[in-house]
Length: 248
Length: 248
DNA sequence: TCGTACGGTGTATATTGTACAGAGTACGAT
DNA sequence: ATCGTACTCTGTACAATATACACCGTACGA
Image 1: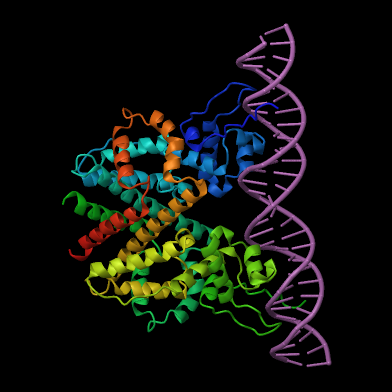
Image 2: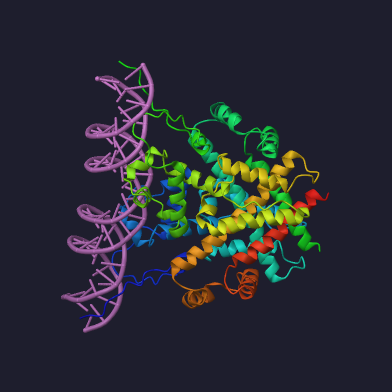
């Protein structure tokens, strides 16, 4: 009996860093991992992450579905690769200005990325596997916190805190968009449909503050939820919160 | 031809407020929406939200799968009901103390809820449909911000900001737990498996700050990511950020 | 008393990720 | 130069998902 050949089963980290063994046996590959990932990103941008199915992506690439598994071990790894590619491709404006300006720029770059690729805000974990894109992003963004008197650990904490805020804000914005699109109603239609029931059920005697505050908030923004306002407000608060650490 | 009877198709809001028409024709229902929702929550707590399938939940209730659709129009509505039930059942300690103590209590109540029901942190939208549980929660939590000199709109902004932070922190913690469980490796094993590649690829010349800061952060917490620390740090920052608004 | 609205269910469908086996290809050892 | 074998690519197959639809029986309301 020959020794069981045990296909090495490419690790996600190896894949991210394109550190595959590359034993040139067999037919040449007709695609690259990068092409697969790029097609997946294109598809997700155009039709959402739920449109990125193995079959659909294969069709887009002119291959049979199972072919993709020669490039990527599974779907979750594909998503990780998509995210890292996105991070790798971010434009990185030089870090300059006051610490507030620098962190604002970092926040806005991230927000713009997630708004341009809404699927990413939902897919991105707080601590994605350390791919090259993720690392380059981390390296760049740490520059905004360098020289402020923070310890290394505090720099990491502060950056993670800022990025988590931005990701959540973008995710909430994307979700609000998606729900509006899915319901097929604009805010006015929604209110006409659901207003009567809400009026009956939201008893100001039972929920005095909720009714009062909810109404005030709803009137100021034109909608029940204004994502851009939430981002502006939250960013200001987040920077103020970091100020207490930085300017202490 | 008789007039098309057009089954009214229960709206999510009607369902949340249990405001169904209730036309007592036909056989008596053998279950209630609440029983279905309670069973779903039990199942999600025990085995995760992905275990809550129509078949499995029906089996748990001793019914045929399709039976559930008499109680709930679809799965997404079921999840919304589960969330609202969770919110309705939260213990609400009386609001007291300084504003910092009050908001800390609110944050910790929410964090505890999401840690006890990890599926909820992923499922909860920033602005869930206004069910009775959600409303009671909102009413209660607004108390913590009353009388601080904030406008109604600012109260809403501040609460949403705090809650989004807590939800994200809990979600990240749950995800870290899930990944650890799924990989079957503890942190040490993971490092032994992936350390060599990372050492080769994380070039301190290319990523000087990233390597330095990442190492420092990894050493302080025993793991690559310490969720509880992130919550503590973030909560302090978030309260400091709100202080700038409240004590202005 | 009887029509009909409704509860409960069996069957069926479209869609998903992916396991598995087979066919052809080209490198590397002999 | 030859040939085994590792590898690419693909067709088929399977398990699981949500849920549409038709049907059966029940019990209220006219």
